[in-house]
Image (tube, rainbow, N blue to C red):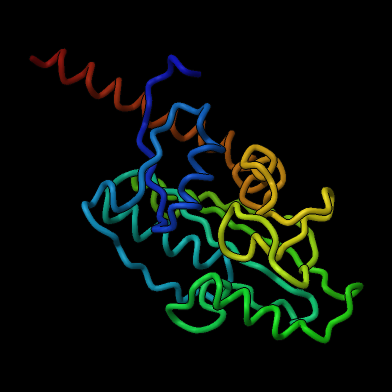
Length: 223
């Protein structure tokens, strides 16, 4: 698809790690991945008021699509720990409070799980991705991906971000932060979600590019 016309897709995130992962996962598609800050010249803050990953992903995608007038992809993802009743969930990024760092969140998680036995530390990463087309409002595409694992007793690995140093991926027995990017991108919750989105994204891009080519041809014919 390298010879196909390229269309810009805006990603509604200010997280450089997440943006890099999405770029890598969609690198072979005819899309130019940009952050909202790239397009708008500065960050766009979107309050995440939803109670579910899906609600937050749609909220972010619609807000950025409206501001940029471009096809927008947004994800909302987080960690669900069974021993904590599914927490931190949608509050994963601010588990230890507003403005919390990854280190703050990881420290709180370890503290809450310090007395939980190894056989009861099951967890999962969940990722919901929404694709908002500003020319087809109200018909957002939504997909989800999951990655099962357990919570380690101490961090390990220097890669990734967020809870990656504590999340042991079940199939490989290593933390997400210990994986090479290519390995992570074959196993992660975000990889699963974007794999489900790929054919839908390709179809939307093809449709919009075809419309643009047709409109350009019509404009030239009127000259």
